[in-house]
Amino acid sequence: MEENSVPLLYSFTMRTASSVLIVIAALMFAACGTAPDQMTDPVRPDPEEVPPEPLFDPEEEAYESISLAISLGDPEQAIAAYEEAQLEDPDAPDTQVLLANLYLTAGSVDDALAILQDVLERDPENEAALLAAALISGHRGDRGRARDLLEQLVELNPQQAQAQAALGELQLRDRRYAPAEQAFSASLEHEPDNLVALVGMGNLKLRRDDPAAAEEYLDRAVETAPEFPFAYSDRSRARALQQRFAEAEEDLGRAIELDQDFLWHYYDRGKVRLERNNFSGAIDDFNQAIERDPTVFMTYVYRARAYDRLQEREEAIADYRTALELRPDYQPGMVPLAVLLFETGRFAEAADKFGEAHRERNENDPTDYGIILLSALSRKLAGDESGARRYLEQRARDLSGSGLYADMARYYLNPGSDAYIYREVTRESDRFLKTRMNFFLAGQYEVLDRTSSARALYREVVDEDLRGFVETRLARNRLEELQGQP
Image (cartoon, rainbow, N blue to C red; front, side, top):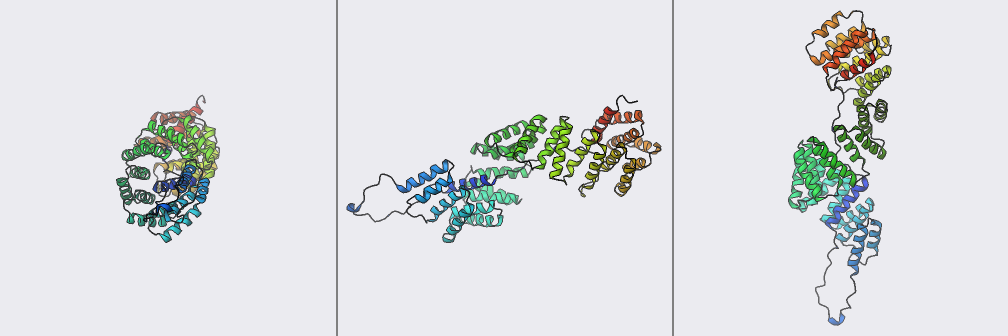
């Protein structure tokens, strides 16, 4: 049976609720960040009626106060500046959209949406309001509403790069890759440095298994927004998939510098460090991720693998247990835990965990009959011969038609004579199957106190050095345990 490997599975960009609102608001301020144009009086007044020119323009000062408050990260003060301002037409649609964005930046999504809906009732083709309402709808999970608003906006103005980019992102989430690429391309045609489109196109290429092309777009994203952490974290995935782990780790280090609270940067760097055999560094990263959110079960799985590689078995066992407490049906975590329990002499627990792994297997995957034999052998080593017999009798139907695995199970049930099973194993031409069977035969010899025969077969298994197979690892463990025994 192949030992669990460490797949390089990277999370797609994740955003916290507050950061999403900030991104939406930033996009909208970019679209309407200047004061709305005011109507000029076409009639020249009588010079005698012209009032003295004021020392300052109160409306211009109001917008300057709003901009200053936003730049200082104080949206509430920006709203107060707006409300105190002497605006010529505070109910104008563009002015109301500005107010909606201020509420959005302050986190008052309901207030912002109410203002935008009022604007759209009076001005259904207001582009800024359509875009803001679409982004809010998408943030709230109403993709249908978001798509409708964006498609309406794109129909009004096909050159609206932000709308095209947002529409592409929606299509990407829905795995509609062709229309997503079309929307991102349209956005970049009109705005080559559109960050959403560049990052979106990078992720699209990643999903299409083209990491080299993804990296090109993400290089542009980093150049466009060098302070945007997710451009680096996404590029790290493209580089890691090209086996360039050092560069991937460097990107994730930069992402962490820019956003030290985002747990997934640590999580991803921990996995990259696992690939680079930097197990202590990986543990440090997983510690940081767990500190930020102790409920992500996969973080414990990966940290357990790092501990295991460092031979820190008790720590690995504890982490696998925690992961399975958080996600009891996570079958890929059961076999590694069973192996560690087996190696530490907790054979009864190992038997239960191997048995659970068999029960929880994916019915669509090929059955690994070796797990059944591992569970039975663990019971035998625990001194529970009758339990091993009952277990194999219960699993007889599962083993039916499994060839040499079924033959080994019959030998386990009646180990009085090994002539037949020894002959069949010796004749087996498949190197991998023969090595696995030698391990199970050695295990029965150990149970029968035929220590010399057990050592000889365990040695054969170890010498075959089939990397990634549990039996190779366990044979090495049993050989060490039997050293010095008569």
